[in-house]
Length: 66
Image (cartoon, rainbow, N blue to C red; front, side, top):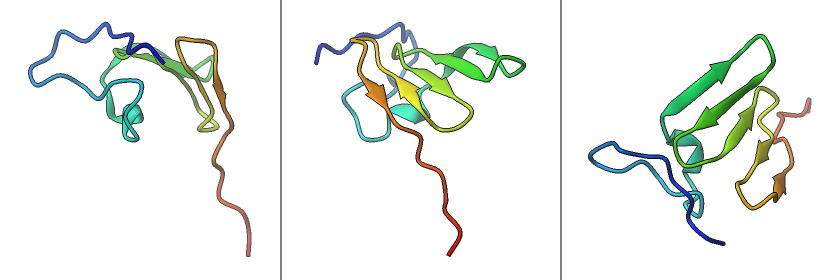
């Protein structure tokens, strides 16, 4: 996967390929719509799902009742 980034921070935010990609800074937040755009190009949804810049969907990681 190509590492798309909008990040201009020093040090750089995690890339889209990094396991901690959700730690990137928010460049556009729309909590009323339930999503945020991170500076690495990831769309992060309030249900913890993600849409990566290449179109790959990451399913939500919700906690389940025991």
